[in-house]
Image 1: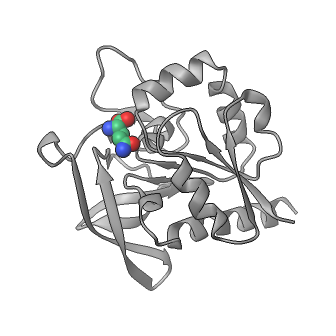
Image 2 (image 1 turned 90 degrees about the vertical axis):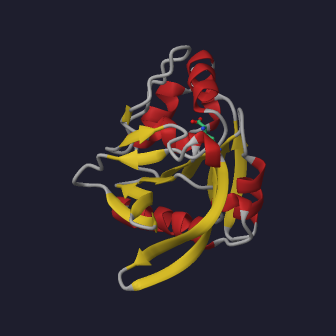
Length: 204
Ligand code: GLN
């Protein structure tokens, strides 16, 4: 049976994730917007967008508690860019207008727009190592990307821009500060869906 992977579709760059997932085979992508749509999902992606807007909408639509329950169920969850901000534990740059309340999926601090406004967007090689000893180069698309720091002991880095971790994992949660869905390369989407197979094995 196809795995159902939800993409939070309330704001931001969600359609490209749906298109990437559709290319994988054996995955049925689904855009989710309402609290009652999470139950039969096998995994969930929170896309890029604006983390301040996500904070307001998650609260207003009653989705915050729903996503926390999803996390606690052990199913895989992946945040890209603003989605990574939503899933971190601490925000280093306090926003005066909107207090972002992160969901604490990954023990890491995040600085929003951390790569500096003068280079709001750029593409650069990211070295990824998704299996021990098997590194590869992935085209990282960074758009006002967050910067990760203060990684907790249980957090594993899987991708680096130079020396800096830009793809990290903590248990069932994966964060990328860049946008793999804006490339043609399905490697990281495949990796995420692979996590789902692992999570299922653990349950059995
Ligand atoms: N800077 C945005 C934020 O902090 C993220 C931008 C993006 O998702 N491309 O919400």
